[in-house]
Image (tube, rainbow, N blue to C red; front, top):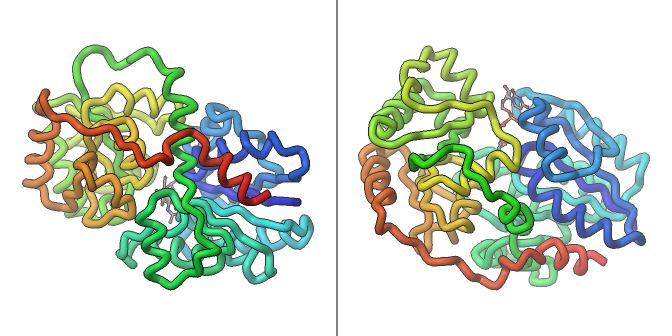
Length: 352
Ligand code: UD1
């Protein structure tokens, strides 16, 4: 069997690594890695390949940044050539980024089977580009590998046939379990801190919204240390709008590699984010999380209070900051039977 494994952006890489570790145990499978080049900076890309020991991709399409249409179209044009040449039996697409959508569309038109890893998640917010990417990738995929039972429910509601749906768990948790125990040193010292990430277009591209968010975070930073590895999109917008004044008290960093980021969150007391993946990682590590979004596809993180959505309600954000940094604030350990480090094993077993 020949598989093309596709990835393109930072949140794909940590989900890809454990699948490759598993595929390496199967010499009968010929797999090739196709990197679309959606993310390309060393600290958004190369560092993850080094940290996670992912082999050098067989192909790098080098598409880089651009509007949604430009990026998607460029990936499609290049990926089609590779599919024509390699003639794979299966294409694996991961998550919900533009690379996921583009590669899934190409493979489906060429009648190549597709496996979608992280299928069935829904925020029910069609203004999110990721929601459109998910909906399309699921439609054209033959194998839908779900991370949580709620994703299975979503697919059933959309009338997907049962024989396409597989509840396997999250390969990102495989990766977290594989790496987190190796981290034994807190380089940030004894003072408790909040780990902050923010990059979503709905938060950073609009001047008024970004200003209100930064004003609120500045207020929090007067009471509690905040460490903020800044995504390049956010950095550009902060500079463009002249908002550096809100960051004086906040310790800003360049984007971190996988291990450095895991270290930052492992020792944090609270996470404030708009990322999808970080909501899952926070819940897995039992670190309280505040999500600056109105909706989430990671609904399981809300069930027992690990995560709370505050959207652009700045009063609620401060209220949740106060509650979630109380010394007696505790969270239960999540145990859904899928956090056993064997998700990739299940996926590869099903595919073979
Ligand atoms: C993409 C994903 C998003 C994911 C995020 C993680 C889509 C639609 N969005 O958003 O779901 O949460 O990745 O980071 O696929 N840039 C650089 N260097 C890079 C990459 C990006 O400077 O290596 C800058 C460019 O200015 C670029 C901007 O960041 O235009 C946005 O990059 P893009 O890949 O379009 O989207 P993300 O915001 O990273």
